[in-house]
Amino acid sequence: MRKAIVFAGILLLFLTLPGIGQEIDYVANGGMFYNFENEPYTWFVWDCVTPAMTIFEKDENPSKDNVNPSDSCGMFVTTTCTWEGTTCDARFVPLDFSLSTIIKVKVLAPEAGRIFMVKLEDYDNNTNNPIEIQSTTAVGNNWEEMEFDCSSAETDFYTRVVIFPDFNSGIEGEVWYFDDVRLDIPVAVQDRSPVPGSFLVASNYPNPFNPSTTIDFELPRALPVDLRVYGPTGAEVAKLVDGTLQAGRHSTVFNGAGLPSGIYVYRLRAGGEAVSGKMVLSK
Image (tube, rainbow, N blue to C red; front, side, top):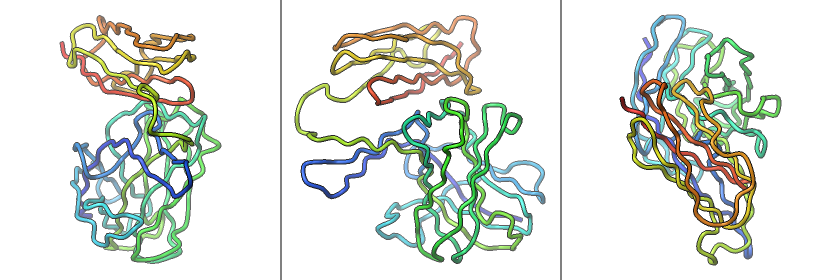
């Protein structure tokens, strides 16, 4: 039987690269970030031995280094099954591949030359054109950041990322570790010190709400704005803003009357940036 410990969370991650007068922000795309340091999410693991999906928790990072200095990570123990994987059961805003098509995963494999797979699914899971992308580990027993090219994926369609350590090897009892499953948008910023209101921000209140909540956001300048809300299944339930707005503070109301209780996500896009937030409709 497989034994694993996994916890997950969604984190807005900022990384700074060396350079003169310039930084690179890795901005969360539609809220799709997994790591194992913050708020808990339920992860599921399945294989051909265990018909029902099983819940696991996180584990300590066994080998901190400059690739992955995190204290915690996900751990995966293989079985002889040739199709086994893991996924966070949360439903996220559909992935936007318009600015980046690379999904990255930090992996610590038992040896080099092993296949690791990322699979994209829509909100109906496996029913509509899932995409499978494989890559091969370059090292063993050390962290590496693997990249998966999703350029063939339709934007605003896929809502879940599934990962398959040790894909198709059928080896029993090997331990894999993984962390920081993410889709990044690199954005060059020439001057960070500067001007208040230079970054897109948004929030909603009240939260939880019944039946309506107000979404506030600020714009640093006049920009085309797209604001949409997605329901518990990942399907779009409302388009609140679609047009150019002036600089400053704006508010719009989302009314959940007639919709079921659950977690809803708003996504705001403006000027090449995107932010998202969770809202709980509680009736």
